[in-house]
Picture (cartoon, rainbow, N blue to C red):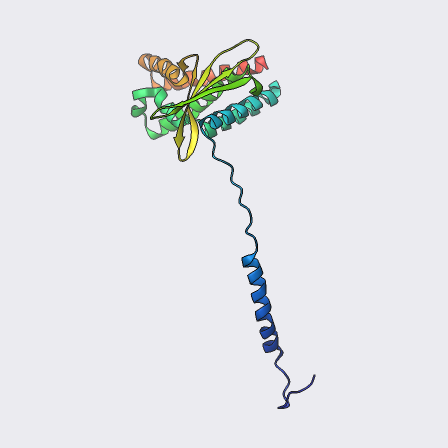
Length: 224
């Protein structure tokens, strides 16, 4: 390697750093001025869309997991839909009425857990006769507290109306009640549970709900 005018070898590190700076600058410019990646966000579902999604998921599960050997998986999958799509904690509280205030934190958690299973089985039972293609979404009306979505599912043996009460919580529309032929599922629970509590205790109610879940599970296996 040659020497400079002073008889010294050139300092390669300095030469390389001087070359890298403009090259690095051009690379950074290209990165900063290049097109930004597209961010895709799914559109927010409205009240009717929230009902369509929940019903579609449940009806799909009922169809795809109809085999008796898959009843446990079917129940688990439907319960996940209920937990995602229903305002189940508030529904559980309303189903007990004033009795809810007398429960401690542990009892409330136990009750909500069993209530979700009961709600899961009753919703599945009401939709078992239908398919997604048979459900018509008729209307959407709102008041100060909620939105009502009217549906008309029609199966081979039934032709009824199911109204869903939908509320907005944390920016998402979720199902707050299910009214079949004018009868609210939450009000129906409250009527049953208040009668049991008048004649017995909270433990008696919990046992009743657990037994009902076992009977529903046996019926599902028999009908599948």
